[in-house]
Figure: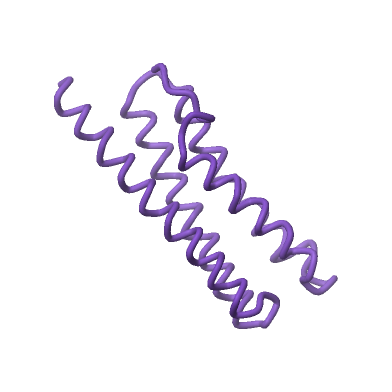
Length: 124
């Protein structure tokens, strides 16, 4: 495959979500640093990492599989955002920003998956 992850807008949007998330984690209580913060860091990084890893795979089918893994990590991340908002670790304004960013990434992943699946149907 000739796609490079850094040419994909969805990768850049995912990277921005990481930066936004990390800046907000600084405000979490100390006792969450190794619990929710750690899990949230892993899940938000997994979105970006799986997009990148998928571009390095040999087939479109493999790429699509990694995009589905990225979608799963996105849903996990969104769940943590909701809980963090419920616990008032993230205020409503920042939660709305995170939700907007993550919803956009979800739409972009869905579009990319659909596009790649259409290409696979043409090829096979």
